Image 1 (cartoon, one colour):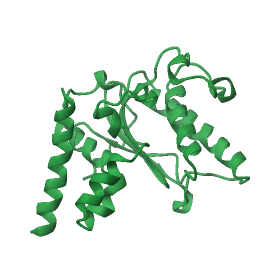
Image 2 (cartoon, one colour):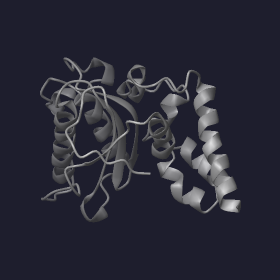
Image 3 (tube, rainbow, N blue to C red):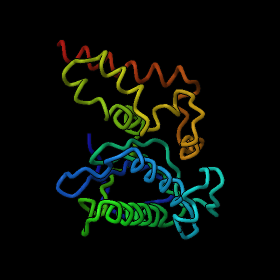
Length: 217
């Protein structure tokens, strides 16, 4: 399902943003790479300039961000791409946030792995999530991305185990995790689809069941 919106980002609107490595190359090689991107996601959501060396050893909650540019409702990092569900909070917020995030991570990655040139395939891609049914669907699409191949192969048990062991998405946060990275999310600025942990758990379970029925039929 795709809903392209060929115009500027509007305040208060929801968008699915994504990008992959140029030539589909790996952009997260080690756990420390994922960790850097996650910290940049939090730090770059700020009116302040980001100097990572000043933030590197700070816990997420100690980073001074001034005012936020966007709200993040869900995300998932994969070895060669990422997905982020975003609401724009201030004019130009998405463009400024993504420029800071992708520039900052590209500089880090190129220096660490002694490479030059662009890291990402394009500026970034976006889909407007203006319809409620599509916005809710994105919570399943984004969080189930790491196990999509297993689901397509009808390996449901493996998929359930795998998704529970994934530390690089907001999946854990919707299941009540108190991990440090949970501060990245601004759930209060998104529709309250999941009042309780069980609501989210049942929602994801329904998608597993849907896949099972779809595969069998």
